[in-house]
Image 1 (cartoon, rainbow, N blue to C red):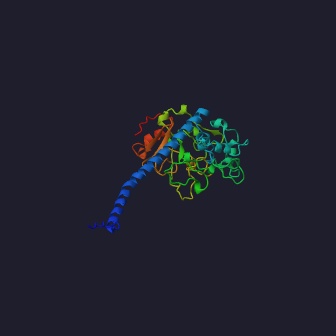
Image 2: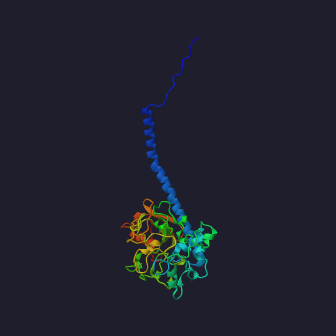
Image 3: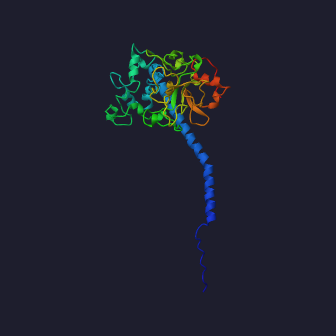
Length: 350
């Protein structure tokens, strides 16, 4: 009788084999990581583009309702409510908008006649000043809270503290709220134009009125009147004129900075009082100008955390990614041209 040989039992991998496997895994991870990062950034950029598309549709719906676009910001103190607050009903934030405006005395958010354009009445600037700090003494709730909070129950969170995803780019690194716990940020600010028709200091008290600005969303810069634009006032063509663009951290706005006078907010306001000069309006409006180049870091410039440029929504509702090279010395005229609505430039976007 023959005896069958027993197979050898393999006890496991040798140390060298384990090291080889680990090395191969590390190489594969190193090769895959850049690809994964590119996919994640592409997804974030697409979400950012979708946010701007929603804001573009909201702008057109507002124009259809009132025959003009929203006010960029009213009065001359850079602390009034901005265009983002006026768009709330058109981006599925009706409850929040109602909480801000549902009061007979309008002691929360001032709504001008016909939502802007023309006189707001004698002495109305003072009323605007009274609510410019979002009426912290009359707190109203966020849209994601219960009915008691929305009704303005004592101890509730001010509505302007709300974090609204439509206003946030996933690629941005700034905190979602100013100082990490107060007013909700926005990565999308309005285009007020270029400085071709402005004075040397366009942001001080009454330095340049909305009637002289050539963008789409205007800083009224006076107490008694507001200024608006509409589709028919964009004589350069809606496909050649920017409405809203991206913003991120800038020279004086950093993630851990205490100096956040220009921190971008969806509700507007957020600057000092009249006379603080340039910069405060940068929390809700930006300029498209050789002095404020794209991704240049200036507090009044557009810019993003996407590689090589930023997203913009044009007045026709189209969203385009604009390369930061458009702001270089040979193409600054193109960048300024898409920033103005009525100067008659010939635009050839690269």
